[in-house]
Every structure is written in C-alpha cells, then in structure tokens.
Length: 141
Image 1 (cartoon, rainbow, N blue to C red):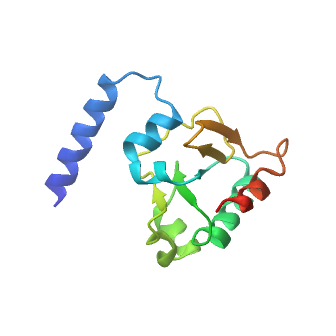
Image 2: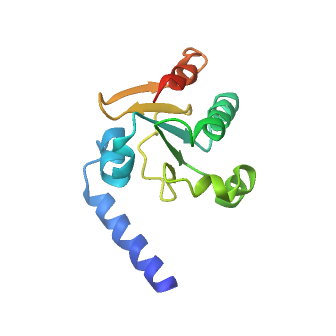
C-alpha cells in the first residue's frame, strides 16, 4: 500500500510540475472534482487564513451540506485528523464534501473562503467586505 501511495505522489508531482501554472478554480473543479461541477455552487474553505471567516464558512457547511445544491471543498488542510475530529467523520462521507489532501486547489492568493459557481464560472471571496455571500447561498435549490 505504501508503495502505491509513493508512486501516486510521484506521478502527481511530475504531472503538476509539467503543467501550466495558470490553473484556475474552474480547472480544479472540472478536472479534479467533476461531480461537483453539477452543483450550483462550490464553497471552498482553506485550512489557514481569516479565522472568523473560515469558522463561519465551516459552520455554514455543517448546517447546509445536506440540504442545498452545494459542493464543499476543504483545502490547505493543516491537520486532516483534527478537521475530521472537529466536524465528524459522517460529514465527510457526504458525496458533495471533498478534502483536497494534495493541496491542488489554486487558492493561493486569498486566505478567505471562496464560492465558485460552476455554471457561470463566477468566483466570489467570502470576506468581511462581502458579509452576505454565505447568506446568499441559502437560496440554492
């Protein structure tokens, strides 16, 4: 099993180093999480950054993950074990909840959670300057 993981990591690293560094959020969603391309919105939550914003987005994800047409991606996770302990293993078994364990999501330019709308390819940062962005997600069907 260890050998398989090492080979997978090696192949992934080589593929990433040979690819164009202009990867976008839409490329990430459509190529890495194609099942999330079918939802109305994808909430991307980084593991580090604005603690209040990340906390609000995480609580929103917990409250609405199974009731909205919403995909959820946790990226830049510092401790997978701690994240699963805090949110519960059942939460991560939902088909619309993903963990970007290889940090492939190109969310380098912001420390805030973000919302990506696959249909329009619109990208919005959840920050103190955009206080209603999470509330707007409640209108998803």
